[in-house]
Length: 109
Image (cartoon, rainbow, N blue to C red; front, side, top):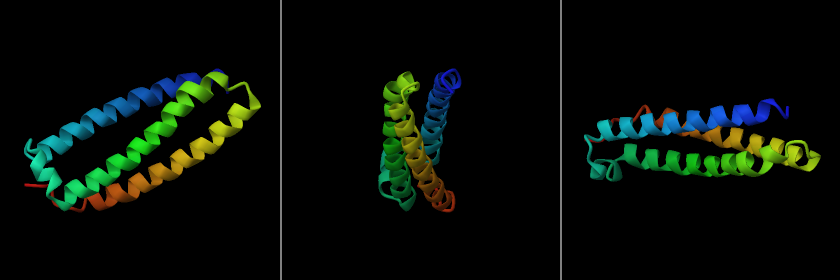
């Protein structure tokens, strides 16, 4: 666990960066590069909700990566990491639900 966790954490960080970049590009193209199209549409509101939940999840992830992963050998840190990972998984499940609504909404025009 001590050897794998830091490596997995780095891969997760790069994965989040790629997802954020591709998501921003998709939203920009879908809104015809007009921020106002996003703020005035149901699609934009659902996207905002998704981004808020993702931001909360990223806070958990950052805390885990920079505080708990370096202390993975400590049983208390390991237990807290496991609890936080469960919370992250639950938040990501909510992100999937919001995403399922989002993909069924027409893109903003």
